[in-house]
Length: 141
Ligand SMILES: CC(C)(COP(=O)(O)OP(=O)(O)OC[C@H]1O[C@@H](n2cnc3c(N)ncnc32)[C@H](O)[C@@H]1OP(=O)(O)O)[C@@H](O)C(=O)NCCC(=O)NCCS
Image (cartoon, rainbow, N blue to C red; front, side, top):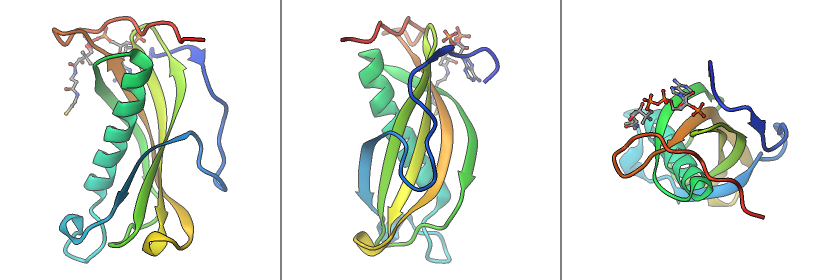
């Protein structure tokens, strides 16, 4: 991000445990598989965008829009029958924008091994009723 947020909110994560709060959990169905039978990466990205949008909208107390998606890495495939868990961590808050790290973890076969499959940095902007940027309100408490 070139001129984004400056206020650091959470620390760095690691590969052994998810970084952030569980924001979304869903079962990977055959309808979102690619022709090889694995889950389509674009669907995983969309779930991460939804999860990040929920977290950002709670922090911004209202409507947000995704302005940028950076550093997406697809570490491992996702399979039909996995439970996809998306973790969100707010890393920085600027005037109108919020930088979030999103991690997607798969529970193999619903209850097996938990592996990090995808991660990326998403930037959301708080917007008003006209779709224009508005300041992110101060954090409560
Ligand atoms: C989000 C949107 C309202 C921002 O409008 P804008 O006129 O570009 O706003 P600004 O230039 O004032 O930037 C707003 C904030 O976003 C940040 N920003 C803008 N572009 C960015 C980028 N590519 N990466 C990271 N941050 C970015 C700015 O740094 C600024 O942050 P700050 O206020 O915390 O300093 C506008 O770009 C938009 O409507 N985009 C489409 C959003 C959308 O439809 N998303 C879904 C896509 S399917």
